[in-house]
Image (cartoon, rainbow, N blue to C red; front, side):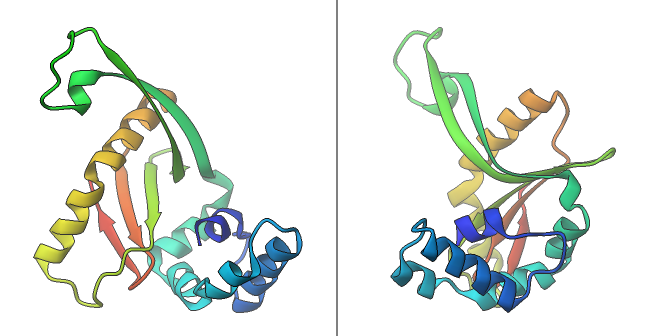
Length: 169
């Protein structure tokens, strides 16, 4: 699913035919195994791109950066609460940001997840999923702000199953 989201052409709203064609091409090119390609939920992807944020990505596809690798050097004690080493010890963190949009007024970071959440989640369910990913997204935000030398204006956790967009910042 992440590979399809990374590669789908956003110069137009993706259709089931476009997504099928992309998946079949990935299978033919042996980038994706047929069994895995068959399990990708096309409707889930289409539903996301019909959402407000999906349409925002499409309308701003020229400003969109996807699958952006980063490296970040951090103090070990910022990652591990009970760190017993030297205060000067550093950790090199590597990751890949699913995507971000940079416009004149905004820097929006987003990350796709395929976790399931009910159609009408409780506030406890939303808080639980936020807590699961807050550390990861904070690292992504810090890395992006460092590279871009500007503040991230919004961090969005996109739950594709159930089509939820959760504001993290």
